[in-house]
Image (tube, rainbow, N blue to C red; front, side):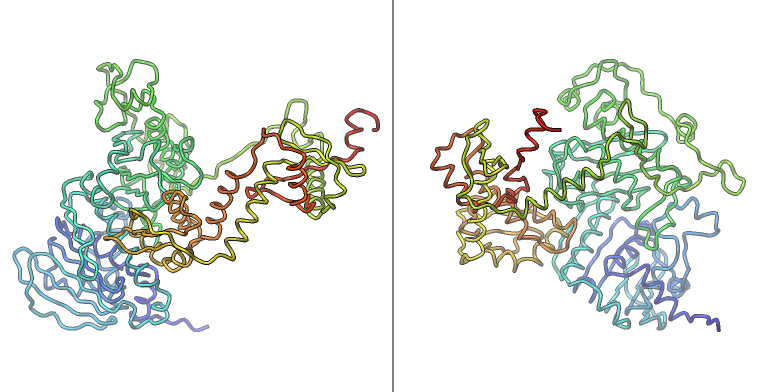
Length: 627
């Protein structure tokens, strides 16, 4: 086997595949460089979803003439000097891969000027260097990237549509606005300003990215737990979103998606969220750099903590205390003095109105090292250095199954597996069973809900509501499938306010929405206007409908309108069906069973069985007539 030493052209393209796989990652790397350069004003401009043009302009410290070519070399960086620096990284960038990788797969130009120097320019096309020339420019740096992946067509082919790529860039810029609210950002798409922040703090940043109303639905927190600072905004108990695109976590100023913190927040909200709803949060975790490893992901999208249990416990306890409204919450809310509470746990209203009496004794805080000792977490020494924490993967959650009293673990009294198999066989037989309705003899009703029929040696209990609901649903669905699309104009258009990713998702599915009778169009930067709805669904709750549509982002990248509309039809059928507790006449009972055509395996639209069968032998066993 012959070993080949790769050329710079090849290994830069390989690095580009990991570091800058999409336009949004190019924006991420270049904006991080601008922030590390001390910029207070940053402009981001894109066209063609970032494939055609990306331009980042900042007023940072700039790059000198002699360093311009060095900036394009692989592993050239101003942020590290030794290997030990990796363990105390405090800048957003540090590997020195980004500019070389981007330049290898695009036409790239940098114009830069230091405070006391002249502006100079350098172009690099597909990794081929031009000459450094004198240029005109203000203090700072402007980086222009054109024709991304023009020389790697295989990579270009796998990019998303312009709209989807634009949405992901918009999402990344929004995270920068939130993570660095002290910096003024201007974000322009195809000549149109999408975001403009003013560097006036986090509240202003949230208002720019979302809206001012969002703040009124949030708690602002500022906590110090085990030497870890947790701050930001979390949605209140009634404020949720249909997907996770409204969740932002920043660890030491870096935007990451982390399983440990995400699970802690989700579990803290567990008692307050409905199914397929997700908490809103903009959270900042600040901790000593030596207990967090940022060099674990090619594009720095995640981090690894020295001890996941302490991080999880700290985040969970702070957020659950605020949501549950106990007395400790007063210590974690940003606008409440950090003093101890001497009363019993507070109610939600007491926390929100700050009506509890507080003593003047502050809570004792605990350092990270004290927390390790107090909680007795095992952090094994690495390389003979006991003081260095060990970076662990998230620990799996362990569950124990406890046997009921009187049973020996591992030896249940009954073979539940065999019992389940019998149940499944009976269910399958029931689903295939059909009986001529004329053979069913009506014997009466039970609790004004269950209709009793007899035939031969079998008795059938029919849930009147479930049966009627299924029949109505079948009629509605048949009518829906054969229907002509007729739209009903609305007196007042309905506006769907969305973020950039949701907007791109809805826009990509306009054709599907229009096919079933909605009239939809763009309305402003990231909003959708609904002017008409399907005639036969005009009474639907549009807010609920579009929340369910946007929830599809969590699983499939396509609107599952068929499933959503089935739910709407099922709801209509449920409302129209006869209810449990209503007495039916014998004529209504006969009409109902005739319409089922004797299908004993029928289920209601929500999956509940319509009929339950009991054999004569099963009833006789209950009375001990037989064994």
